[in-house]
Image 1 (cartoon, helix red, strand yellow):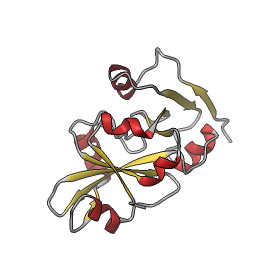
Image 2 (tube, one colour):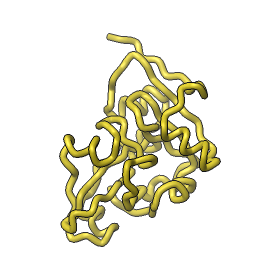
Image 3 (cartoon, helix red, strand yellow):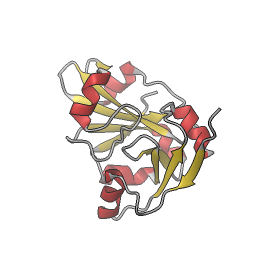
Length: 165
């Protein structure tokens, strides 16, 4: 078994997400883990020593209207497609195909962040985020995470809170 290491990120190794947070003057902590290409959210939470309820994943969907929506939910949860659709005023939403993620967002599976996508999409942060002073999510690259106050996300992307899990 390969040993995995988690360390706090050094400032010279910034992702685009971190540069956007710096530009917006949003306080954050960044982390990287090495020795693994894992993208499983619960494994990432374990590497970071955090509850999987505090580590969030970014999911991209498409509605019946062909509009795209982003949902940021705990890695320990599944997106409830009915609740997700209702939260954005759609009749239905479905996950986009994996091959569509990179051209649409600029991010690969396992490294998708709600911050810094190619286009601006309506984003819904799961309401459970309110229970934490900080949440963690991908910094836009596999192996990189950022930790911010969830109240800061709406200042970075058009975002609302919703019960979507």
